[in-house]
Length: 125
Image 1: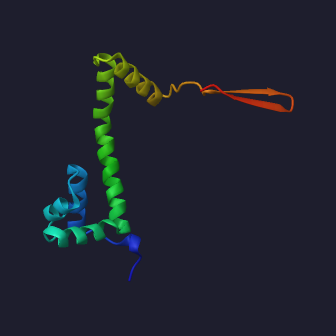
Image 2: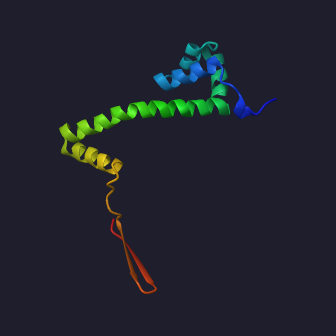
Image 3: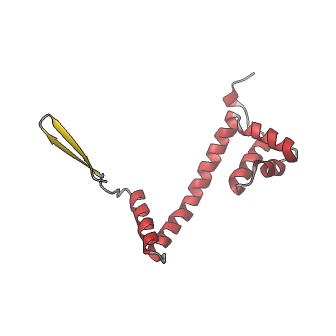
């Protein structure tokens, strides 16, 4: 028996993961769509398949791709909220999120003073 990480993904396993990632449906629904037995039997078999290392690796890859593709939607939504939300609080929070992601983090909320061998930390929060 070969190395578990070198196992190939079956068509059913790929369809199961693809359905879960694309639709966010339940494992039972994804299992049925992917060709597993219907009902509880299919859910159990699909759940076992989802715990296999090579299936988990494929799922992480697919989730990463989906998040990457949808990051543009999230970025556009943040810009839309920062520019036009009715609530100034929402505009402020969206603006802060944009600045954080652009690398403009707020200053550290701790002050560090050093004098000789003495170090004093003051928490400003």
